[in-house]
Length: 173
Image 1 (cartoon, rainbow, N blue to C red):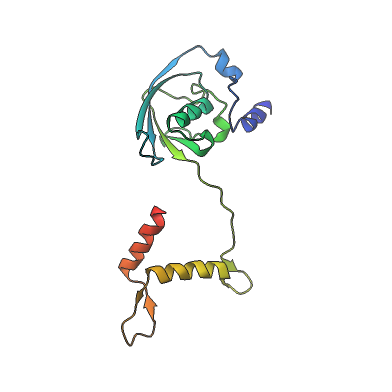
Image 2 (image 1 turned 180 degrees about the vertical axis):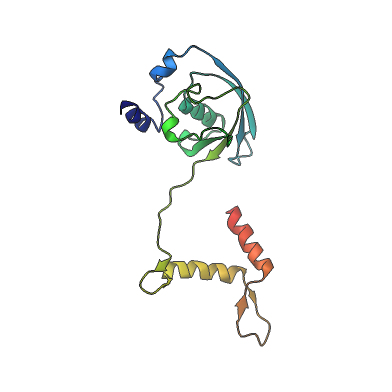
């Protein structure tokens, strides 16, 4: 229970206090951790190679990387190779050795996803779009649809190309 308490309270950093297990560990070194950035910032390198102490906590690693990329550590997340356990905020107080980090491991740096509020798109009583969703979808349709030729019953419609334009715009935003 105490471990769960510390994991929960240290999700946003450890205030530079080492956890007991990190202090008790024999000093070791993890050479050449390969950091790949997906933050899309031109002034910062896309790849870095770090050699770090194995008793470094995950939070200390995130903080170190954040300083290199001139970002807040709260806005970054680390992702390991799919074959390795995922890094969660509950792991921030653990040492790299505890999580089995190894030399030459590749880590991806990503933006922390923004929290969004869930809102209904459909009115459950009428099974129709809520007015806000209808306005947004209508605006998209107006922006990406093309005008019909004379005699068509529908004044505007989406072509394969306009659908592709819409999807490309949606993905890049």
